[in-house]
Image (cartoon, rainbow, N blue to C red; front, side):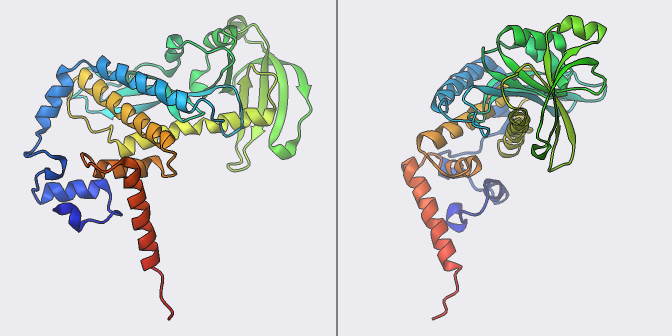
Length: 343
């Protein structure tokens, strides 16, 4: 068999290429013949994508319950969510329904991520021409939770709706934001905080859209030496904590990067809208399943390692815990074999 000639260190992609180039059949999966691409495309096209969406949401609820007692990096007990989107480019001739630009098609993956567990809480798939800020109209805000967003979501009408829902937000201010300073707090510049102010918007439209007070925090990032200005309706947390919360927003960028690289979300088996939505929800479900396995079995391996091991062990009868013990034993043997013997 092919697997007898491959070591653990070889990636899943290398294995797939080996199987494809040598014309081997997928005997290790219990499949006695080739699976044509059209078969998968037909399956994704005919089955309603909402089935996979409902399944994914059930998995998300179960995973969030497992991670509910975890604290985020800033040791904040209340719930904190990061909101962002990623654009997946498509070929206009193959995906004409995915409106984006005149010469390009695309879809957007709008995600609200729970920062306690790095698991998406809400996933909305839209066509590429939908503006990011419009997703705020579809969200139900949790009282007491903190929502962290970048400047693409700076809309004071929608931010005031978050405020009225007894929730909090942290976002970036734009340079042309007009405001009147009401009060300034003392800051320790050694922490990177330059200013901590209580303000009120003074623009004609913005003051009507958000008539309440806001908190403006200027922060100098010591790593990039970039000056960042935050707006929030939270007046109790320290300015340093607000800056740390915004920094933790990058977990959602890591999620987008991980799901694109390791689940091959950019390669679709069908061209219809139903096929694309189906495949994306399957990818999200796989991600959440791996996170659930990691938590329940208390595994120390990374999500990528867990995915790789499970992919190589499909349809095997070995218990999952034993699989990871075997991998650890192999890694330990490799490390020992690399040591030079002096005597």
